[in-house]
View 1 (tube, helix red, strand yellow):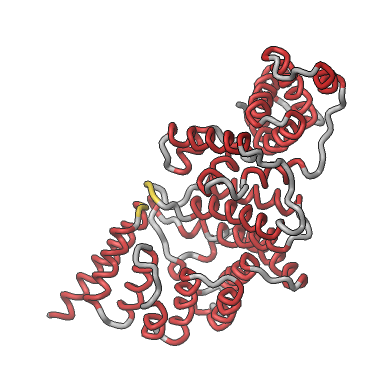
View 2 (cartoon, one colour):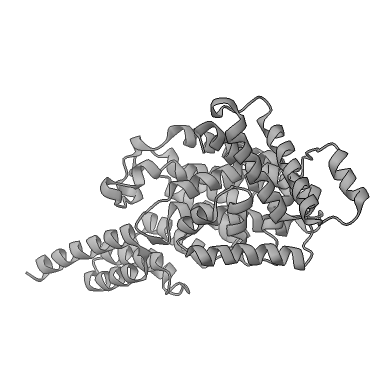
Length: 404
């Protein structure tokens, strides 16, 4: 697919699928028709250049392909219904994409199915692309998508935006799926790469889409700001040959200032709305981090206070772990150790990495070595394991000097 057509594909695929799902009530039919429309676009658009109104062209062409398939397979028994499809004017409703997003993230679907379906229908990623991104065998990923579509059909999952009573809970699931996609991109759970830029970019694109579709929803804005501010550090987080560079050692001059400025602006807008939520508070924490031009300039007191707010609205062991990191910067590693020892995170490699760092700073070298070894063993990401082993190796040398 050529560059300009590929750009239209990424921007308009989900929108076109959403319109056709509403019209025909069949996800598979909608997907196939939109793919056929883009295949036709490659042949009919001069020199691969999208015409004015490219999105409308795609939707109209896809609708025609869908009608042809309905005819061929006789999947619409009632002739008057077919006539309505043939002669009715295709229209796009503002809620089409929202309906599709909430369908992909319906609570009846498992979380891994929600992620796969969101990337497939809204991102237009192919099954092989999603399988590579999520490090799942392609047949397994294909089965997940098929099962999710079948469940939507067989369970009669409605293609609609939830009502006011159900919206907060359902929106939380949608935001969680987008953030999960981003996190898997920014801190890959396994594999040879520290960061998967394609997943980060796709999550940010979905976040922007949600903000356009739900401009009055501060948590959608908070999630977008959070992703922008974290992604802004990416150029400095990955060192030579893909090595991990921890936050205190990063070259802050390499951070993406445009993303930081946009993230800060969104955080300020959220503060003016005064409807705080977990994503907005996490965005504010990252705004404080990106405010500091040097590590020693970081306002750790403000970060601790923000974590206190986050614990009040969304308490979780990982939040306690992150808060302990900030407390240790203020009150020393022993204070951090006291806060994390009882956390139920023994299978989480970051817990052991944080504990190892506290122990190292407290001069408890043997215990730090054991914690670093456990963290490296539990991590599935190769650059993270290499970083943790380098810390362990350095402690080995330090231990020998102390013994000498």
